[in-house]
Image (cartoon, rainbow, N blue to C red; front, top):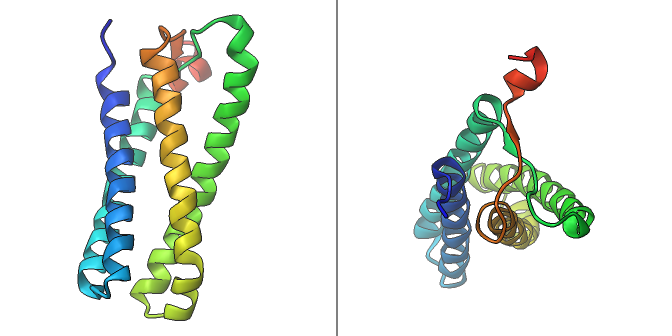
Length: 153
């Protein structure tokens, strides 16, 4: 069994982003403000790299459907929707959190930062689970690119 390169790479970057957030959280608890800032920017860069790879792959190569047993398809779909919602909320809150920190709006930053981080951790964990379900535990289903789906190419 071989795992596909781009999904593995994008999953690596989202894990890296979550690890950087955890390190950044620990740094701010130790009052290492500049190190915290650098780590959270690194987390954002890793998240952006994930997003660029994910969107590019989705447009050009496509998305892979669930290839596991039909009896699990509904559960996988519900789990996937939950993951997508967490990811969207986490990304939006992450942007707001980083922006408020960079603009020195520390009251807002301190209020939503921990919530954003927790949502980001759950988004990363569920993203890894989606990856495992699609490419490791089961053989992936059909992959269709957006171009093929739209233009029939």
